[in-house]
Image 1 (tube, rainbow, N blue to C red):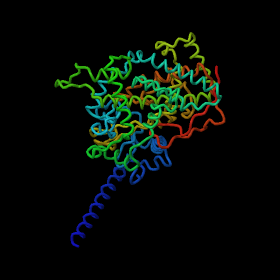
Image 2: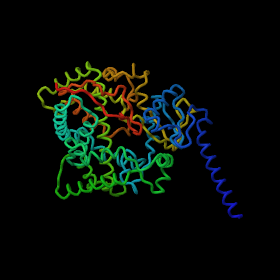
Image 3: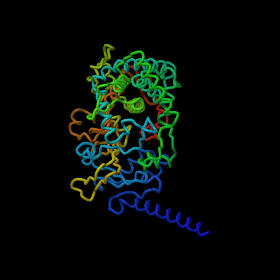
Image 4: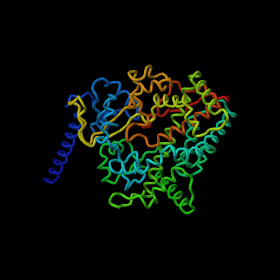
Length: 502
């Protein structure tokens, strides 16, 4: 009996101790007198996430509520106090000026047990720096020029398939078609595989591509635990990637690498670069240790290139067509440029520099529909905000930069909710600080695949607008409704538009 009483007392004491710790943690910003919302016991400041609010809604509402209260507001990233940045001057310190104090993203990754989590987007510290150095040569303008013909070939097939769809019906759901186009592009460049998504919407690569975005290994509690305690999660050998996703992509990479090595195949694509990094015998560290990529690291980089490349580019082009359908004057101005530049039907890598207005349309789309609306960093040593000693970002603290919300602030963009590509005319770009437009981040940890993403979107959009005219129809969702469960910005339903041949 005494033992039972002792155990019950110990349990009550432990529960009480945990409660006190949680309460102390959830009073962190209030005790410092820094503006914040009262947190939810599990989700922190992410109350209502994926049920009543989408990720982009959370960031936008928080930004609009607290902007002007200081350089940052207090935020609770699940169980962890975080700094929610509100001013471009502090954003510049985090991303550029004091980058050495904010090199990490602080996301869960566990490459030992969960090999696909060992991707450059998730890695921190020396591992990230080493991987960035290895991959930086992969995305130079020279390498883009090598991959250009491959992207263009898929784009012409896309236009043919799109034309066949128009022949059958004048109303087209463009969101899925664009995703099939970018799946084939990335599948070819990252894996060297003819995915055939354009011809077959249920092709294996398209199906697994969808699942890699939508399927989760854990529910709300598991996700909260991974994000609140990433180091403990690693010690517990937890995984983030669903088993069927890991098995599929690991198998595809192993088969592709083996086939190319055995048959000495070179395609001048992303996979070629990864295989070279795997086999280059001259890659040594200062201590003489080999720095070659393992097959698991090759798979992880190919996986993130695939995921980031097909979803972001197709989403951007989808929203661009959605806005152009509602703004026929802008669409015609864009078409005039595309038809002039591509007048002889010869689309070369060099002529992309003449698609100036096309770039403006894409940049404005990324402003209004910032695919990754939040940039995450983690502070690696205490940082006192210049001229604001009350505001201190502590070592280990998550740092949140609401890029999407910033892009819709009238302080930086007049009439911020209006689609206006002239926001990115040469003159206006020169007037703005670079950190006031962040769809690809900024500084040393910006998006390494930015050049490829821009190239893919330019080619796809230019060929579509040159050949087809887009307008709204009865099924066009106005206003567009955001998908609740996506960390990226995405439309809840398809994007239906009326399409005619030019």
